[in-house]
Image (cartoon, rainbow, N blue to C red):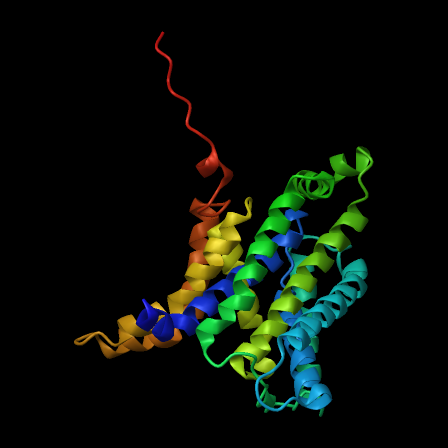
Length: 308
């Protein structure tokens, strides 16, 4: 068991971080908003933590846990405020137009990071201090964080705010007629997703030890969208399972590409064609599994047939 954890510790922690990124996209989707802005807030949270730890705190050796928690808090608050500022004008759009607007937001953040000195430009920020010596030790931070995130989203679905989200998702006009303010709740869902993505970015910056513009790109938007659409877009379990499975999938494909006797073109596709594969999965999944692989029906007990 210790050998397994030491060998696959990096992958295990990455899978849990991917699950939380899936939840960050699931939150605005609860209110019917197809937002692809999570990579932008994820990158912003990572840059906040990287700048604070390397240029403000300047801690040598092991990074203190209390400072990491402070960075997570600051990243969540700043990303939430940016989410409100961006969400108020952007959430007037719907459907594919909102998706395009949020992709533009991700690209704007990426271009800014490429041209600012404080973010390290195209090179990025290296030598981010780490609070733990090994990857598997990050479970002390990541495991409580994902449990709290799942519990929060699950509880949110079962209170008044979550029911308002679902009502807006099902029929915005009917929800408005019932006295629900669609703009308020859509901005709230957008901001909550931005906060979670920013917190995950702050942890990931220390986990990866480096941070650059590759963390927040359009490619990442497609990957996170796959987490939710294929995992499940109607229950909190779907994005968690989708995030874990599709984070591990590239590593599985790389291992499969090293199979002896495999044709060269197929091995190359398995190594570098994950975005094509994810795109195919989105198309196939939306046709045959419109609510994802994990649906609410899986958790309902089957009724026994009564004999006439």
